[in-house]
Structures are given as C-alpha cells and as structure tokens.
Image (cartoon, rainbow over all chains, first blue to last red; front, side):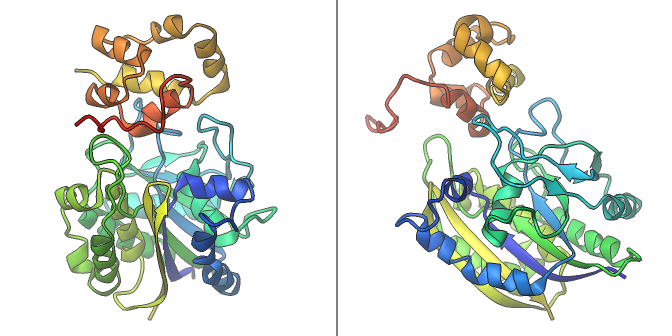
Length: 279
Length: 81
C-alpha cells in the first residue's frame, strides 16, 4: 500500500526561481537562501519519495478571474511550466501520476471533499519554485508530482481548519492506494508578506516563528487561526500559509522536525521552510 | 463594481500574442475589455494603487506593470503621505 513518510513546507518566492534560472544562487543576496536548502537537497536525495503530493497555489495562470476553484486536483500525465508574462521558466516538464490522482479524486469526493478535477493544466512558479529549492537543476524532476491547487489569491480562501481536514482526507486517500509508493507531501507558499498597497513590505518574523511552532506541535490549535489574523499579522499574501495545513493534516499527530530554515528578505517575502518526518 | 474585466485585461498579457497586440496599440487593446471609465483611465495611466482599489490584485496588475515603460520604480507611492 502507499504511505506518507514526510512533509515539506516551502515558500515559492518567484525571485528564487529567477535566481536559479540565471545562475545567481551563490551571490551575496541569494546565496544564504540557497544555502539554507543544502541540507534539504541532501535529505530528499536520501528520502527518495516515489511521488510528491504538492499543495500549491496558482497565481492567475491556469485559473484566472474566469474560473476560481477552491481546491483543484491535477489528474494529468504531465504539466508544462507556464508563461507567466516573461516566458516559461527553463525547468523540466512536471510529470504527473494519473492513476494515483484518479484514486485520490475518487477517495476525496466520496469523503465529502467536492474538489475540481483538472485534466489539463500549466503550472506556474507556485509549483516549480519549491521543486527548484528541493532538487536544484536536474534534467528531469526525480519523481512524479500530484498537484493540488488551492485558491488563496481571491477571497473567499478556504479556512485553515478545512485545509487541515482535507490533509487528513488526502492521507486516507493515499493510504488506500494499492501500490507500494512512498509519498512526500509538500505544503507551499508564505510566509509573511504583503505585496500590495499601503502595507507592502510587511514582514512579521515573530508571528512566522510561532506559526511554525504551532504547525509542528499543536496543529489542532494552529489550524483554527482565522483569516483576519493571517491578514493582519502575515500581510495580504500571508493567507497562503493555510496550504501548509493541508500538508500537516496528511502527517501523523506526532512528527519530528528534521530541519527549519527562515530568512528575510527574498524580494519582499519571508522565506520559511520545514522538513517533518512522521513519528 | 465588476473587477473581472480589469483582471482579465492584466492577465491577458501573460500570452505573447496579447503582449504584441498591447504593444502595437495600447489604447485599442485596453478598449477590448469592458471596463468602467475610471478603470479604463487607471489602466491607461498606470495608476497602480487605484487599479488595486478598483478591483485589481497584484498577481494581475504585475502583468501590466511588466510592460510599463513609464514611472520610477525607485519612487514610493507613499513618500508624500
């Protein structure tokens, strides 16, 4: 049977994709950030997941204002890196796992999570930057990816509690898949950042640290944070952090924090990163 | 107030053929989106904060901004506040 062994939380700052694509990962500005992921690249090379279940948000790329699914599960054979306005990122095509996607879709819908099924979709930096941070620049991504897109761009975004419960349902779905597969779950986005209007540039390192502590040790409490707290304390784009709770819900109640990295600034965002193993 | 047209104008520039059309005739391209007079003017004059107030969002307006050749990116909109 398939099983979930670990979880990764990781920001998706677009500038980190640009830094990787343009060979700037060793410079004074980006160097310390990529150094914070050196441990992670070694860890995942040993962890060797068969599949990554990647919770991310699309930035009006596959889903613009015409269609805004709250939860959308990718069920395709592959996902091409999208042109986000300045040409697609020069990264490998993201291979999917259609059979596992179909199984998860069925399991989630019959478990009362009525998500949207996407059979054709391009993926933006929200999905490819976390892959870059964890794997560097391989010719091919080392394993297939099952993407779950969460709407955190246009209110109403889903609640933290709903994301956490969805994670638990994702776990049930994966653990009922008959093939032996080791699955790593990624929760991406965040941490505190506000990209627009009068509070642009907001960072809240103290709140980010507490968010990570609660996520690891007391997710039942942490998942109940309200939207207004994310907005006030983590800025208008901090709401992305609800996606970390899908990842957390898919893991055991007890996890071991293998790695934590936090860095400010990356463009105008606080980069946060965790590796959690089931215990 | 409908914000969809303003968002769709911005996001349409994600695609090369639309970027080309926009560059060729900015005003004509903007007029293919059914915006209010105020939205149209904000888009044409690249009033970034007003665009947000009229229904834009940074993930949309950043596509329009990528083609902005006017303005000073080192000047803060808030420095006179």
